Length: 128
Image 1 (cartoon, rainbow, N blue to C red):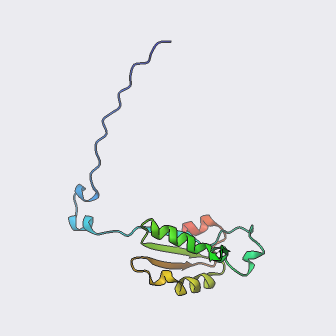
Image 2 (cartoon, rainbow, N blue to C red):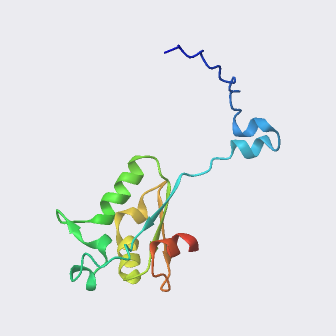
Image 3 (spheres, rainbow, N blue to C red):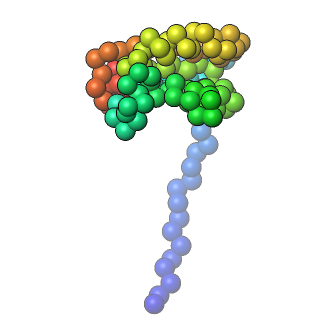
């Protein structure tokens, strides 16, 4: 077998910072918060009958609701703003978030988005 000649790759130009392409330099200085979207409804029926009266994100794992683990992970990784998309049991999720310690954490905002018309995760993502 003959050895193949070494292929040469085109040189990759180093990317410029976002503000270096022109435009308003003050806009490049503006800090955009890192955001996350949490789908609080799985649109599945695997956890029934547990989820008939309570949403899956409020089901306790070691006496702590699942959403607490999610919000803690996001906060510890630098996320500053979280949008929780709720369908089923939306009022319970909204009440829990408003009364939780996450409502008072400085530099970390949790917002709920309520939709009662979604029937799948794809439809929820399309609405967002």
